[in-house]
Each structure stands twice: as C-alpha cells, then as structure tokens.
Length: 111
Image (cartoon, rainbow, N blue to C red; front, side, top):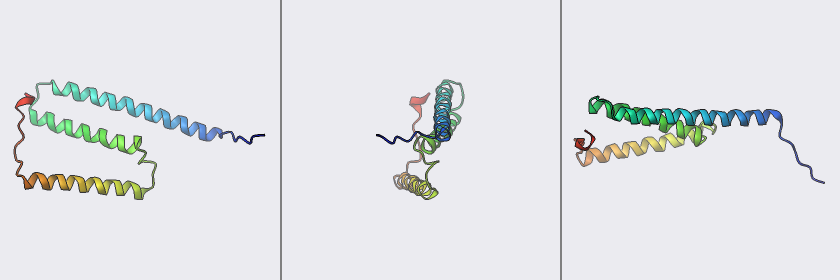
C-alpha cells in the first residue's frame, strides 16, 4: 500500500497563482521588448534613445533576476549577496573604463 499524500488545495492555489504571475511577467517583458524595438526606429536624438534603452533593459534585468531566478522568494541574505556581487562587477567595469580612458562611444552605426 502506498501512502501518497495529496497536496493541499492551498498549496495548489499558491502554485497556480505563482504560475500566473510568471506568465503575466513574461507578457510584460515582451511588451517592453517591443517598445524597445519601436524606440530604435523613432526620430529621437541618439542620447535619448540610448538612455531610455538602458533604463528599460535594467528594468527587464531586475524583473528577470527577481522573479525568474526566484531571488524574490529567497532569504534576504542571498538577495544581498547577489547584489553585492553585482555592484562589485559594475564597479570593476567602471574602473576598467576609466583605466583605459574610454571617453567616447562611436555611434555612427546607430544612425
């Protein structure tokens, strides 16, 4: 005889809610991606386009790491460890940019 334990209705409802949350987030990410593609073709100054694209991409990045990587459900210590590593990565990248004097970005291909 097996002693299978049936999941409680509350846990099933929670899982269903979580899956719906992921689907809604995926749809919003696709809408933001579509807006990024449209933005590239608008007659707007390059600096504005690059700034808005950077902000939109950062928003998508944080949405993906928080929900799809389940950081939003993990313990806060793991959350802060991840962001400490991320901050260290950006600081290293900024230091390398300053070290090699990258002060101009060629955007001729973008026009």
